[in-house]
Image (tube, rainbow, N blue to C red):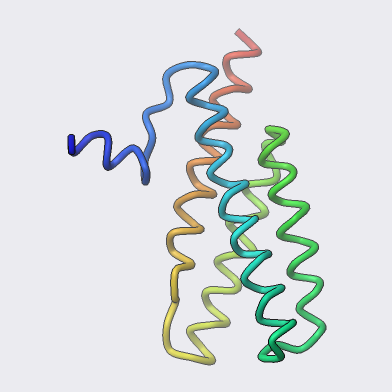
Length: 120
């Protein structure tokens, strides 16, 4: 496996409209996985039902990333950083949340690059 292709999974090369949209979809994937995991935890009974708000916010952020709204992945990063801090305070670990932050950062890169292309 080529190293650059493996790294594209974490830090894609954004050079055109298609690659910008693909990078933005990483935010959608992070939001979708986060919402599904939270919903599963609520159903199983490990989390209070107040966490439905987190599920709804994740779905809204994911939809925004999918529709290339520049503010959506920024909100996703902020929410995820807050949740990382909260998780670390309560459990002493971050889990896979740093991967979500990285995906949202890539979504920021993609949405802003696409916006730049559309302005030019």
